[in-house]
Length: 232
Image (cartoon, helix red, strand yellow):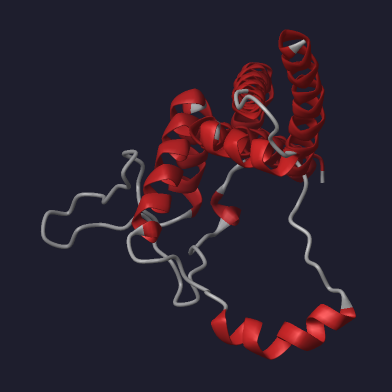
């Protein structure tokens, strides 16, 4: 009888895990929502805002910056052709930052030139410097490069889906691991703790995927604008 009870409990836990993990996975793909119930707003409007943090905790900012730098490193390695084309274009329309002592062009952490900016933070640019021949060359290189870039973005999307699947699997294992009479809330919490590392990895891969998709869309728009300027 005890074995039968354990089997029933495990089966129920497995069904609950499937439902809970599915709900959490869907939530991870949605933007954060805010509870604006009128009663709660009246209770917490003043106190909540007074305690609201607007900055990362000490040490967190550097950690987050390091993670995002790693994500950008993946993007630069995955799309070297994009950055080569854009920096060649910018070399024509922008002004590089030059070291006054050595006369050398200063570069960022990826080895690309730094560009002069206005006091507002916008780059100093003059696109009238681009000749029709240069526009045509950039357009052809972007058009032919999009085939490879779309495939690379699709590969990064696949990696993000695999990371998400691994997180869901780990969450499910953590959810059903406790034996005996355990509430769904307790199982959910144990699942979250068990899958925490996989969850952050999934978030990281999702960020890389979003960045890749945005980069390819931007190149499509730049190519279209170059085409429009040539036919105008």
